[in-house]
Image (cartoon, rainbow, N blue to C red):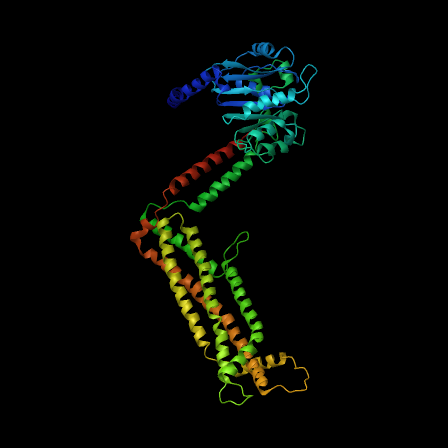
Length: 571
């Protein structure tokens, strides 16, 4: 068809010259001086490496039961062909008729218009034990040779591993990781899946899913010709048909890597994302108004849930009200700590006041002015911490409301900006009003007042808590009696005043910064519905949202199609 012709033309004009250039450079032996792009096939002896290369190239390659001629081969893949005998002759000529090793390349070029162009390097199989007619360091020689090729950044490494061995002990993967620690240039090829012990199939599936040994390019499972198929002269074409039949009918491998589960997961993800960004803004103006009403209703519901402590939270996140209460508990703890520490410093303060301010009163009389001044100064110390607590709670509520606005209006930048602007204005006004009220509360606390019955009960408790003085020969002085009496009165009053503030400050903050803030924000956002001329502007979506929605719809369609095909799959 025409698309194929266009792609073919682009290939011939842009890619073909590059590949031809690389091939010509390699024919000149430039790879000895420069690293050229290639795919290196590495693996242990008898790992199925040659079979993988045959399947890729369509070329029969020489092999033996662990006794192959060790020789680098470079195959420039363009077409299948029967060249096994010629390659074996070249190996015998360069590496000797035994089992020696040669650094010289055998270059095999096969041409055909039906296959892609690849440059494959078939490296000797990794061996650990030298045969009788081999040098003792044959293993080291082969590893050095392999490393020469796989360490090049331009080389993609195909690490061939039999499925019936422990992947953790595979030297091919270990060598690949040494030169490619992040697994960016390495593709794992699992061979011989038909030889896996029964019950171990799940382990192979885990490897293919990249759960056991991580590679950026992952793992693939192939079933190539085995020794019996080679001896029975099974062709490469028939071997491919046998492989297809094996995977289609195998209980565990037919959906590697668990395609059904992957499709369901991806489908759920796509549907969830589509639900989050919504179905899109309607075209009709009347429908747009209903659409905006629905969006605002959900936003208002979110604010109400937070205000009443009914919102849903996940993980370690806390509800807003729970967060606020925790901060008020800190306020309570600090106030109680101050009340408990108060008696320790009180007597010193009273003595100072008595020395500085006692006038015509005779010793032993309680100076009410001293009592009043000390009570006021102690209560005044709580004013700035109360304002700081207001600011802390304000920021917590503001950020929570802003997050709700973002969650509901993020697809519509203008609507979100409008809501956020109103939110910031209301927040600032509410904070000022709350601060004025708190400062007014502390001004009222300068009026020393408490109901007689409440104060009398508190004074009685304080006096009962005082330890009886130790027996002394000398009686306490009138001044000391005066100080003790004053201390008890101030403690009694301070306990009542602090208890009053302990509840009053949180109630002021909750009233202004949670309830009134939420009510006014909801009122302001509802007023947007009256401005019908701004409907289209407010509901204008992000530039990339329309394309993202369409991509999600297309993805869902593809995944559902794949799901249907898998459901019809035989077996």
